[in-house]
Image (cartoon, rainbow, N blue to C red; front, side, top):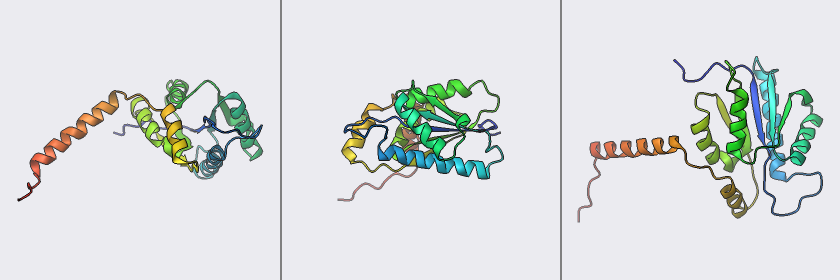
Amino acid sequence: MSEYRFTHGNLIILYAIYRQTYPVEQNRIPDYVNERVKLCLNIHKIIEQSKPDGKKTVIWVVGSQHDGDYVSNELVESGVNENIVAKDYLSKNVTECFDRVLAFIKDRTNPPYLYFIGSVWLREIYDSVVLSKLKGYRIQFEGALDHRPVKEVEEEKLLDAPRKGLEHYKRRTMDKAIDIVLNRMFPEERSRS
């Protein structure tokens, strides 16, 4: 039997939280967040056209109040029905975002299929959070391009670094056990000097 629940509907999580180190024009967001918005619009279009429950889609915008409102307006201006756009102003990082999403969907018999849209560098953080909090839910990561310098991305990544949960240590222990067994089964030939 599958470890996943049957899904009903779709929830697109658009992660619009960012830490700006240089000024951006009033009523604008950085280009790399705009890339996430474009990706969200593409995913929404694909879901509506190809999935039978495509009309049961909600877009969950995660960001500050100013940025969340700006992104929501961008989505509506691009043709998204404003009734399907929900805003989360309280989350400050990926972990808090998934805590809120889990609270929103956990009582449902058939939870929605989840799509998380963020920058590609958020994948590592996403993986650790999903492993520990959303086991058994259908979720997909969609990474938008981020053209900032590596140093700037690394600084932002440190601010959103996940805490290592129990699943991380279980996986690490399992990997080490597998390595030991494989090393016993297929010992490397020692250098012949």
